[in-house]
Length: 161
Image (cartoon, rainbow, N blue to C red; front, side, top):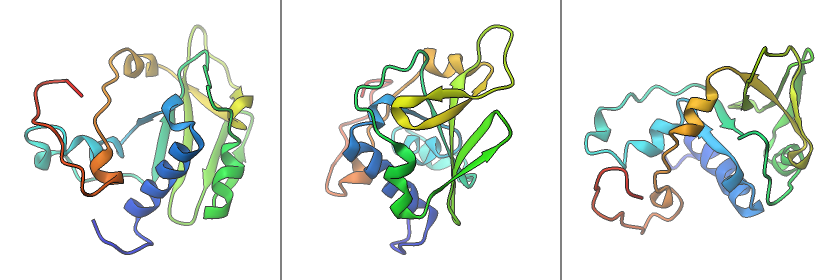
């Protein structure tokens, strides 16, 4: 990872730090291509995982939301240059010149064309089918090496954290 402050890696870590400091990160699940960045250190053959990442960070929010630390995420991230981008009745995202943040929830039943408001976070999430499968089989890798460079992970043993 480059030390350049403008890299997508740095911006992603800065977003995660802000969410962690506010206490809301524990209520979100990072999904999508940015997971690989964290999983690669956890798996035995992590270097063989794809290095391709999209320019968006996807956060999955379990339903019903059980937000323990209500936080207005758009206000929290606006000093970093993120602005609200709303498209139609269904789609809200936080836009930055280098990155986009999408908020997702599992779509259930017949589906809907409208977004899923999460007032405790100040956002509207987009319902998508089959995301419940990710929540049912969620694994949490240690991300401490990315937050604290002096941290040394314990030996890898299956799915233990």
